[in-house]
Amino acid sequence: MKLVFATHNRNKLVEIQQMINSHIELVGLTEINHTDEIEETGSTLSENALIKARAIYNLYNFNTFADDTGLEIDALNGAPGVYSARFAGKENNAHNNMKKVLNLMEGCTERKARFKTVIALIINGNEYLFEGAVVGEIIEQPIGEGGFGYDPIFKPDGYNQTFAQMDPEIKNKISHRGMAFVKLVNFINLNSD
Image (cartoon, rainbow, N blue to C red; front, top):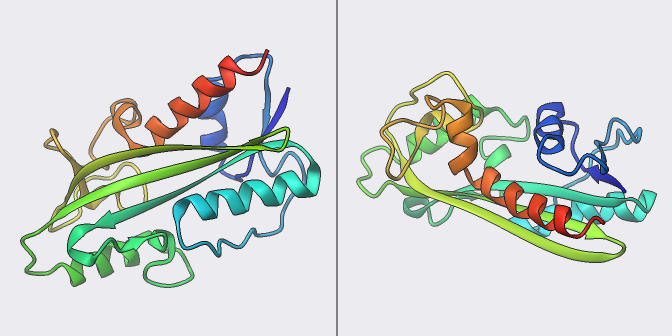
């Protein structure tokens, strides 16, 4: 079975390929020569993931999955949420996004937050959603060099390190994205024969 991951991120592609059955041919947008931007116009993570998956499925008729991730902060009424990647502007600058969050939360004692990932899968026209979430808190200053996005300011519950300080293997086991991808992979492995 051929399966398209609606991403240009090679690292994500390799990570998932290592988790799924070897008889599944997993390819990204680069491999199918799709270079057009898929505009994320949804108001939820589920909607955005479905928009991307449907766009590729409808264009190429390939079984497809896509993901969307957001950081939800209680003190900011769930923001940045679906706008996490472009919270400080269209250029998707992680440093500026973190800076905006920290500025908005200055002096705030309520620091609870959660990362969520939703994956939309379309196989033979049938749609499925898989979600992963991790709860934690926003710390006052960025710490750590690893990861990406908001990782330097997010410390998951039960840990004394930010995602940016963690060994990637540990982070991937407990992260929102890791949880969602495990659900997806289990489903694909069970239904790919």
